[in-house]
Length: 321
Image (tube, one colour):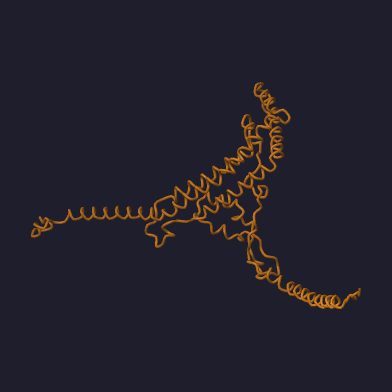
């Protein structure tokens, strides 16, 4: 049996090809890195003069939904108030006030002699809408930044108070955008509370107990009220803690389920109202014009009654004596 000698020449040729291909790839990689280092800063620097900062989904960076200050409450309100119940009441009352202002419209009659719809239909933001928008991140100048030095274009003379141009352009047509952002902050506060519900409820009840201890000395003259406060304000009332824990959890789940759905229905109704509002104002102006025409005809009739009759045309107009 004849043994065949192993031929290693194809393997050597393959290794040499790999070595020859590695050097060009390495050079190409260095070239791409060098080109990227030259072009990336230019692309990164081409940013607008003022750009928004995305708001964090938390309640601690903005003074919208704050914790309860139990020092403002006395017995028995101090035993029933909680953070979640306050936030829910605040949210629904604020949305209701903004929506009511939209339906009530601007005060006074419409200016029917205006040359354009801007004068006929005032679009300036209502007081409640402006107050709500000023507390939200997208309409707050603190959430806008100026590009750093060396970027293109530079904006060294920017006024920090005027960085957010949204605040100056707020109109009544932005009510949907403002309410949706307010809903987002409300949902973020509820979700964040649900994630740390055990700890936050514990801290809330500790603050409540401190207030109850202070109330004991304030009402020391009333024996019955002092006894009730003592029974409800013993160190960390665990039944009260469990009661607020369960109650707040139910409120959070209910609000996260119903709040957005209710607001979407409200905004759909507001959209239809805003679409029909110009027609409503046109009809009011037409009614006012018809009243003016009727008053003008009445004045003409009164004036014609003072003129001489056609059959008395030959008579003198004045009674000369």
